[in-house]
Length: 425
Image (cartoon, rainbow, N blue to C red; front, top):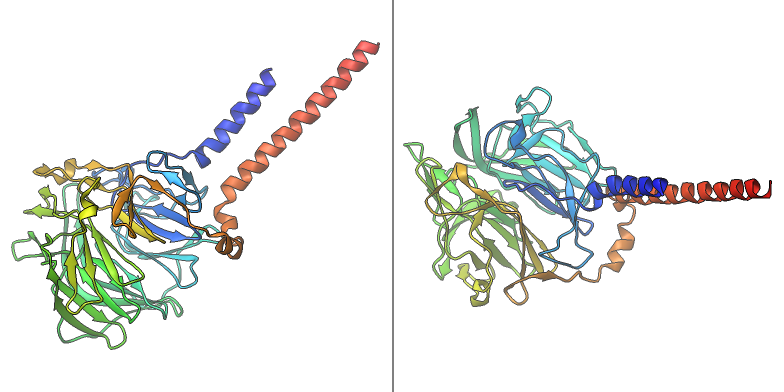
């Protein structure tokens, strides 16, 4: 009896942290989708600027399995902790659909317990489950509040952003930029593009999506003014960057009235619509947060000029106002995770974290409470090798259970023999 209880305890202690993982609330984190898994890492779990503020675990949500938003099963990836702790960084998945590039952000060295910007690019290899600091030719200054995108040639584009030169417990001191850096993921070369005309305003905390024709669309964001306060950029002022010609242009979007915002998200659908969700505005120097309206809006890039619309059905059962969250598009679903909940006239430092997952069905333009997994049987066969490392925790757990059961069987079998021998004697 005692041995059975011991086996149960061992199984519970070993498996629960992996298969029944409950992640801490966080914001300004990273999220990507690889092999039908929504991977999440980085960000902050409280506002104070120290080691305990940063979230470093790597965990995922299995999108090959249907689920309800009230019963989300997260799984921890053992040994997946990122080497530095960071927030406000940008992440892009390479063309191989297996390498994650994490660039910039507020980087905290877990060994020295200080901010450390000596290495600004880190990679995570999905098949092996290993983090690395790659050797890169060229240099890039520390940047935060940047959204990177990758084109079909494997080049990551990083526009503007914020460069903090002095970090204290009370504030970030820095400035915004409007330059364009690129990282060639094939040659691992960083370079600054020389662009002279039509430069947009210095800004950060925007959203960025790249169209199939190579045009990057930048929406919203914020810029600093001469008195060091921040001002939201007019959301109708759409900035366009042509990655084929290395030229900037601007377009004034038409349509319904949309509040300007930053710290929002946007996803691009296959038919050319950009869904913008959340975001906020600040008053003064990051003092008070304010919600924006509408919570969700759609930009039609098929029209010239682009046109804003607000689906009526998107207002029903809409999530609360939030910012600094993450949003990923997977087939017909936009999945929103974590972030800050916005309470008007509340100070930013007292913001409440969101712990819920929200799902938006792009086919019905409505928020739903359940996710139905698509038929991905064919893709699973192709990606089974890549899934080996990331599923290692689950595999080890299964092997551990099997070994325990075999051990228990052998033990009880031997015990039965001993009893029989004792009885015959």
